[in-house]
Image (tube, rainbow, N blue to C red):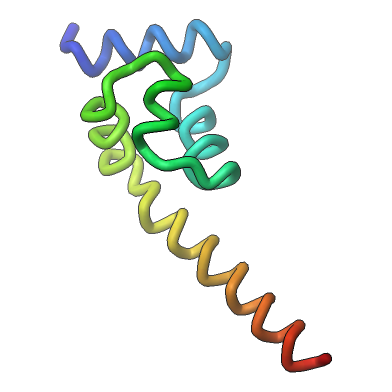
Length: 79
């Protein structure tokens, strides 16, 4: 088992759900950065960034951000 896999198992046991769900909640939904998210999970930042890249969460976070900005711009145009 690699170090990354052992961190994955550790987090999944602690939160009782898949790692991608935990990371998506912190990194995308709560909009926390890699350092804060890694600290919350009790793993090194480099491990968190590894999984962000593996699960392509940057794209998901950016798409979510673009959607929020579009909604904000539309609501401002209506006023």
